[in-house]
Length: 190
Image 1: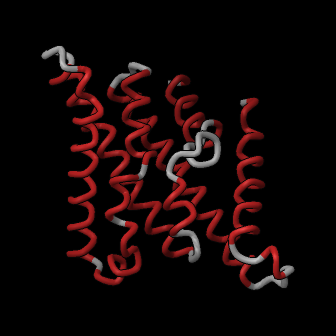
Image 2: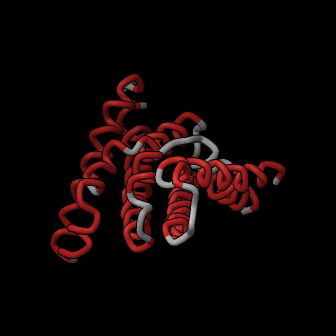
């Protein structure tokens, strides 16, 4: 149980996929202008990431390893991630038209979010069990969502501040992301 807790905290804070491993930066910068959009993107990515990681684990261990086709893992994982994103997109479109329009192009772009594929590849590379993969994916997804929400709150505050002209827009966004990354790196000693 302590190993699972360490795995969860490690993937949530210490080795945060966005700020420590620099995966998933497209939605991090693209959908964090507004808090509600960032939260919706974080939750959609959480669902896709957890679903894709568990499906990839099962396909890898139940199909690829027994057939000695481990070298096809990246191709199989990409297909699984794309399928999970399509299911999520269809569900969001059917249940919440407003959320679907709010997320716009970024919802199908979860397919190209390298954090989703990265979690699946890291879980199989570390030879994690099914439960460990699920905990690892949940921690990574929670960390992704947490960072998206915190960063969007920071960006909403920065818009209302009186900043020098040269610092407005991209410069202050990158500086803020760097400061947030330094805060996450403070957890490295855990």
